[in-house]
Image (tube, rainbow, N blue to C red; front, top):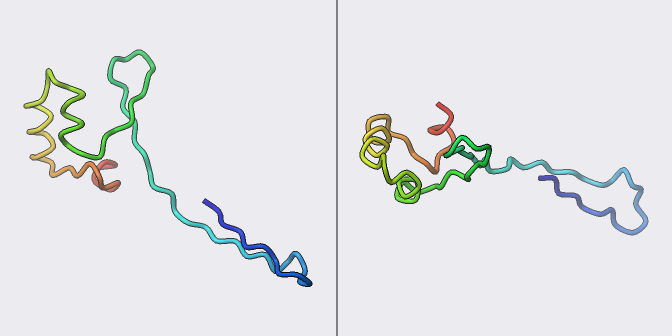
Length: 77
């Protein structure tokens, strides 16, 4: 995201300042191998609702690997 501040009256265009901010990352998963991506929920309960047939396996994996769905670093590793 870029924010710009307009120059005040009488100043040159070179006085425009630019500020860069990190954007929040969003992760997607493909559930049915059909090319449609689903946004990865930030909460464990919402993720488990997507995979009702594998709730126990996914829950155990998240617990064993200490995965935090709302932490970018945890999802990348």
